[in-house]
Length: 475
Ligand code: NDP
Image 1 (cartoon, protein in one colour):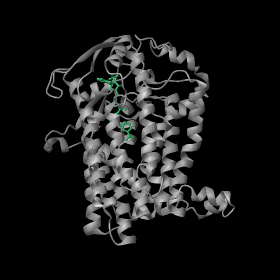
Image 2 (image 1 turned 180 degrees about the vertical axis):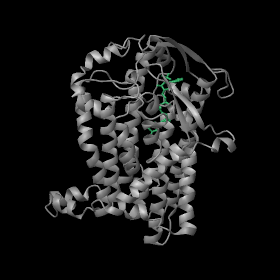
Image 3 (image 1 turned 30 degrees about the vertical axis):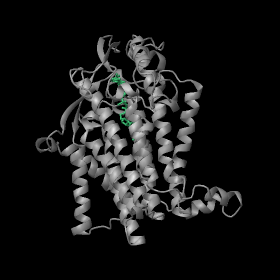
Image 4 (image 1 turned 45 degrees about the horizontal axis):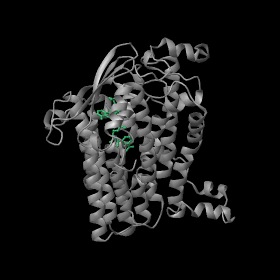
């Protein structure tokens, strides 16, 4: 009721000086203020389709040994019916519900109750209380950065259980994979719905809310910028970084354990997937402070896209390679394995170095060396919602002079390596590279649109100096 009594458009205007013109001098963060029909159609399409995509992939592995076409062929030829497939799908169980509740509660405990101690003894690691980027309303949030600690404690307990305690089987995640999917969905929808209600009725910072007047768009892309409960429970940092990403490596370990149980060994492909993805996950936690300045945290609002996405999409679809290898224990030839390893490491190197160069450049305000030289700079300025004028700099050297998002290119090379580790038998493990290509290309366009609005002609000077987005000479 209160939601209806708050007219959207006037509220938007009252929040600050941002208008919808996209004028160069106005600050433009996060999602749109007005929804065109195409965005709305995409949002509704995704809201309806994404849960089925996840279900389809996991069901295809469970019932059709990871063949994506076999279920369709079976249904088309009348050999099976949708109801038969559904009847064979495990439903939620008490055990899965208990496991999932325990898991999320434990991660909340690690997040809230254990202030970071890793930064006290790990040289070079930045943890503890850190500041995020300035929000559109001009707020600077503080975060307790303790993700590495949460990851280490969780994995130490996992290994202690596998090697000494034997309280549960290391295959426990695989064995409950579909019942856990329903639990993850319940949490994903619950948190997104809660975030929506909270945005309308008791936002953490009303000036950092965005309302488009379209329910579906608000639900999907979020209203609140940084919803919090209390001083420290930050929805974006917790859901983006904890239940899903901490679980990622555990899920892979559980798949490896299942492969050993079923096939008597862990293949080199499974080892490669585990190692390359563990590097990526560890990198995330080692650089958690840096992630406060990435698009997810400092530009996106918290809605279904992040809430459900972090609970369901990420842990279920980012781990498809390991799942596939349980059903297909691929053994790679040595040259193939070495090729995958090198591609994965090169991709990771580019991803990390490109991100590091921008971070170093921004932290030192350009007073640093990039590839051994003083960096080339484009000075730029923008106005935040409170009307304040800010100055910034764009880096034109190093990887940021090769292409405007070469960090995404490195990420894509690493993603391709995970897929290639699975050989050429099926399409399913290649979903990841297809998805990441779409995600990062769309993200690149979205980010560039935002930067063009934010920096205006200064951004145009950058695109003139560095004409390509992802691949020099191609795109
Ligand atoms: P970036 O780290 O590329 O950040 C983009 C922002 O950097 C821009 O909005 C702009 O922000 C600033 N910027 C752009 N160009 C320059 C420049 N030349 N010099 C200085 N600053 C510049 O984007 P993301 O946050 O999307 O990605 C971070 C990493 O996370 C990437 O490596 C990506 O691959 C990875 N990622 C992985 C995902 C996954 O699912 N595995 C999902 C998303 C990202 P400003 O307003 O401050 O100027």
